[in-house]
Structures are given as structure tokens and as C-alpha cells.
Image (cartoon, rainbow, N blue to C red; front, side, top):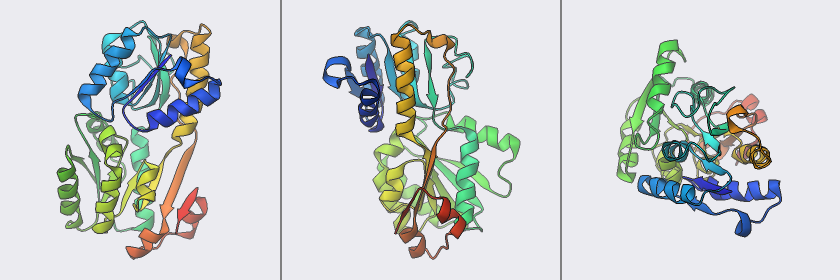
Length: 290
């Protein structure tokens, strides 16, 4: 088996997976970590396919998309992948129909949840900017179009905010802070996770209400984190890896969606912004940073 991913969760996922399968990484798991580098994604995908492993666990949409281009025979269990049907990675969630199966991470509905959380702490928000790198996560444009068609959430202008360099992160946040009623959403993206500390620091410096899918965002000072429990997804993926190693056909294993979510609120940051976090929100939080 091989593991391949585009962010630091890949390494944590490897450890979680090995623990679940009770295997040793040195003996069973060649792995690659591309750290959101597009060239490395292509290079490492070819390297792992050339090893002809029994199964590949691929973390992140870019990794899965690249693997699909070069192998239709090696079983691939995806973890933390976005919109696999819309991107053409599988035929359907219930019947993937090829060599790819696994577990999704976010869907368009989660964007509405993020906006709802931001409104809970700052009711007068009128604009939410979704910040992502189009080179690594182009599908967010489709997410936004889908949300626009359904006209949800009402009363909020949801805009795409593409970035590709650290300088663009800073300039984007500076522009947003000058626009009354603005807020920021940091969705899953290899680029975002590689720069999550910087994003959190800029958001705090500019007092910009923001929410991310990544726990380190809140730990580094960002206002809130809400998203699927990534370690749980890797633990669940271990069962699929085990079944495939025992002969199961990935085409017949349905793509599953997250079942556990975590909410982290940085109360210290909220107070420094002059925001009041509702007691009901604090009561439901998995972690409160004070």
C-alpha cells in the first residue's frame, strides 16, 4: 500500500491509518507529501503508480485527480476529497464505478454553515469572501455557482477571492477589512493549509471575522474553526483499505461523507474584536480557546 497527499494531514493520516490497521509504516507504506506543490503532485503520483502498490490512500482532491489521470487499475481510497462526482472522479457516491472510492470532506452546504456561524457572532455581516487558490482547488467556483442558483444564504453576498501567493493573502485581507460588513471563509485547499498561520495572523491584525475548516486557524488566533473531523475520516478509511486488501472491489464501495464535525471558538480573539459569542454557541463548541 502507498499513501499520497498534498498537506500535513497526510502524515497524521498515515499514523492514524497504521494504528487502525496495526501495521508498521517502515514495512508497508511508501509515502509522498507534495506540500501543495503542483509539480510534486504530478511527480509523486507517477512514482507511486510505478511502484504498483495493492492500494493507494490519497489525501486531498489534487492528489486524487492526478492519480485518476494515470491509473485506472490500482485501487485508490480517497480521504478529504471535495465533490468527487462533480469533478468526474467517480460516477456517483453510491456506485463509484471505477478504481476510486473513499471519503469526502466538504460540500457546498458547509459554506452556508460557516456563514451562519459568522453571523452568530457578528449579525450585521453582509459579505463573505471565500479565499482559495484556483490552481489547486478550481472546483470552488462550481460550489459558488451552485449556491448562487439556490440563493442561499439570503442577504449575504458570497464572493470568490482567488489567491496564489503570500503577498496576495495579505493584500486580499487588507481590501476586505476596508469593506463594511465583510467576513472571510478559509475552505480546504493545499495552499490555504500551507499558509494557515499567516492567514490567521493577518485576519487578527485586521480584526476581520473569519472561519476556517482547519483547526490550526483557531489555534493561531483565528476567530473560529468548523469542519469535519479529519482523523476520524482517516480511521474510517482504514476499514476501506482493509476491505480492498482482502479483495473488495472499490467500484462497489460507496463514497461516504463526514459524520463527525468539530467547532473551535477562539474566545480571546472574539473579545479583542469586541464581539459577543452567544452562550448557546459556546456550549456546543468542542473547544474554546480563552
